[in-house]
Length: 301
Image (cartoon, rainbow, N blue to C red; front, side):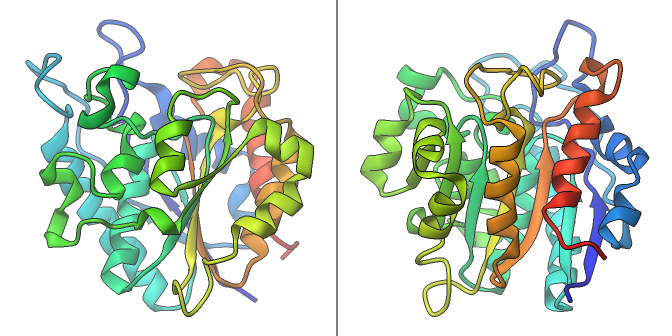
């Protein structure tokens, strides 16, 4: 049996303000899922909180690169330190975000230990970088850029921490749940980053797609892989509480099947959950659904 450790990483440093004078509410994700009894439902050990720096973009303006870059780099190291400690102990971290930039902490931790992969379940690839601004617009919000950063395409103070760029190799990344017609698909395909769209998952079946994608994420190619779960992979009809709700997403049963196969692999070493915003979920139903999906991916303790 795995020893699960539940860790809070309530950083919102990678998102733009939802409105002037406000901050993104994703920092409340961890607390909301804990209120759903997630710690006990997972049978997890308490891993505490990795406290993020304060959200304050100061005088940043478009063209200045990634906002909060210095704070993000420092937080990535602190979170990586915590995750690395649990990985070395043979434990399975379940990290509650936060925005998607927390994935960098996991990727850096794994890179310190060797060659690992990433299975990203996300409504978008989060692959904005300086080389594709014509498609994705200018860089700025790391929460939409973390995969590009982790694969060595971001600004150096984030993409080359400790001289370990890239944290992930293109060949070791699998993406699930991007919308059909996503503008990043052509670039991802050219780079050899394997991507399964919602349409493909629905046509072939979530379990079939997940099992096929795991080829190459096992020894001797890699030493294991991490699962990154962004709540916006779900259709807005069931998960409206995200910053960018795009239509035609996965339905809960599809995500449950996909996530279950990935997490069940003995080579899966950890999971993070991101982007759900309790401020956008007044009755808590979307949070309850997300907690059910996370808890349901693991055997009953």
